[in-house]
Length: 329
Image (cartoon, rainbow, N blue to C red):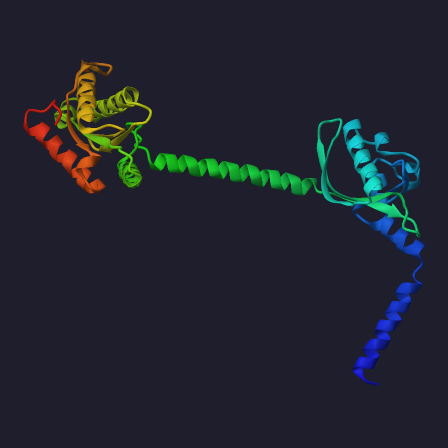
């Protein structure tokens, strides 16, 4: 006998055995052993047949005790009404409802989630005589998904916080040197796009340096120097517009990007800030004193790159220093 012939005989034998299984045995086996809940309902959404798992879920030891009852006997009204409406819609339309998540809030406040599928129940002639459905308890999966969503949100917030901190100077509270160049390049790119669109727009940068900061550190100590840095940072943030951006450029140097500001206006802003900083007291537990600050100002119209613009402002800052400090150039 050939192998193929032997396989055909085995297949035919298996098919005969499958066909000889009583339908009642198959149904009872499924209803008594399935972990998923299975139920059958009539046209009024009353239970006519239930799996053991479904009965136990509703607190019944015998599935037959559920016959003639409906969801309103076991579930809160809102849950039962939604299930009833779904089943009546299936009866009217003949369309199944597959993979629908259902939320059951227990009287004690705990929540159970089910993944439910519902279908029209047909007789031998294809007439709809009710509905049948299955549901799986997916509470653990839902909890895991919610925890994962929460963890992802926390991770996103942590990443945003890290990104924020990576752009900040911890002492002054202003943006840092790296973010200054990122912002400057973005501003120049925007100006370039506007120029191509025949729009007239400029911005100005201010570089400022604390006069005799080394003497302050040497005389009063670095803790007092830190107070100076923090005071300047707070003053600049309060004194500039929301559209302007302040940076700690490094050490005792600061920078400001003034949007929609030409050179003359930028020089005026710098002089206003110079006077404000000069009149702002630096206060510690044991002393109060004033500082002086020198400025260098450059406008986006004067340079083609961030490097050129900063170099120009730095040259003018140096000029302010060499010409006596506490001034704007």
